[in-house]
Length: 317
Image (cartoon, rainbow, N blue to C red; front, side):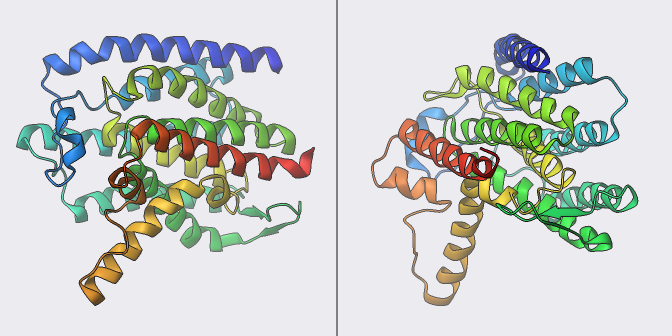
């Protein structure tokens, strides 16, 4: 198992490195440059940076995990299908932005319909295949919620996908946070004695994201776009729900939760008072307005995620 883990990490890293390196000039040639929101003044110099870079690391992680595990494990295959489904939704959104030459891709209702459709199918898969257990963090106890997984699964998928998407706002931010998240879950599944193939998928995603970060840390040469962030959100939800760790997701993914909560707080408070709680939401933009560099914010997010992951693993020590 250890040999497989090392091979998966190395192969995912190298393949992702090659794909990301190769896709940058191709994306530039295709004119897939990012359109920067006018009110984020710190990002003006990022105008035109190639987007859709998520294609590289998603394809690398998917290819290596399939090569290592084969086609025998249904949760793995469904996870790859879900991740690919969300990747396609994100790709379509990024493509629309490119064609319209603005930062508005698919309309909100179109996004939610696509996202909900994939979420419903994935949640039904859980219900029909007995993947309806929930482990309580730090206790080892679990409960089978049966068809309660349908509404919970739909909520978790939509929340995870949009939360990761909101976190993708600074160079290296979503990539580093997700890399640490998947590393923590890879070890968690190993210690739980759970699905080994999904554990390997987590290692593959960690390796692939590590390579992507070579090109995405400040100053980024490529952005993952919705192509990457929506796919990562799908993988985050899959490896959590399919292994009974749905309640552990918001602990290890605390920074994803923070992104969504700060946006919700900002919107509600502004509508009621006309004032803002944060200088800008999600909160990583607030920190940026306060003068923190993108590199420091990305490091802090990854560090907090690592601490949360360590806390979840602590009961197994």
